[in-house]
Image: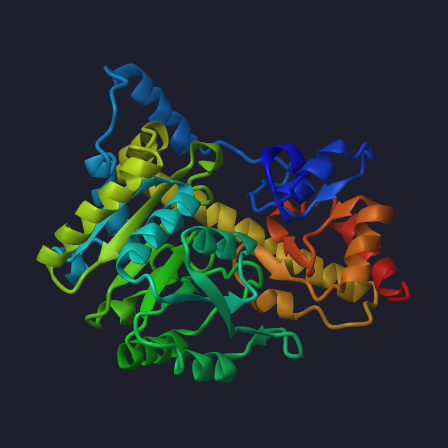
Length: 401
């Protein structure tokens, strides 16, 4: 193969769907594919706290000079407190170091490159299913990827017995990617007791947990949503966390994320960060400033922090209420299957139970765009389109498969 014979690559399974949606001329079209929060008017809003922080930064900013390789120091401090809890023992013991990254995806890639340097023979284990880009990120860093069972289509819930059995057989020093909350794409999360069991397996088998924490605050609450992390912090395992602030701060196009490293001791944490800096230096040299400065400003001001927490609560409540409207709307229409499982799912996404033929029907005949496999972005449903969506799903369920 050479550059003269290159053919077009297939579109991204999610972002490519958005491009198709934009080109669709039908006025009643509905985009339930891409994972962005929308208000009831169908807009992805700029949060008032973010607007105020930006206004402050514009007035106070005196330079556009480069940030340090690991990013804005106060951002790292505030983010670590948000992710782990301000008084958590790992912070008090100095066991955490963080690097600002271009979004959660950047954090995953930086962490993968760091681990690959020291664990070249390890594999990465991904939940079945998982966010499609997980596989791409880790294989691009050189890891072979395999899966552990997660979702049970028959029960529309977690397949915990098979999941825990598989994790018992993960070799030492392999990586296991875990979704802290609001699992993407299923919306199905572990209970606190199940998380404790998984942490005990990890401690026993000595594999490395790598957490994707993209939706803090969108599940049950900012503090409750970190519960999955906590039992792992009681071990002496290395723990990596890729945090994203696209959703809970609405900073989608600012690409604001962080990689947090939890080491067995402070000395080792500092050593790890030196190697993370090397990874960052060759990937993008240093991170962009604006989004991180916004987050640091809001989290560092008690009044703005409280206002932001309320904004997150409002977004979470909208998702819960629209889930309820969807389930009730389908029930009222006599849906031939029980959709009540959507109530139990958390966060923006739902494995809807729709089959591929039904997904295709909805896109081609009804201009409703859903990711293959039936994942819907619940936050894309509004009070204006929920009835049309319910009517269309009922029609799709009646189509021959």
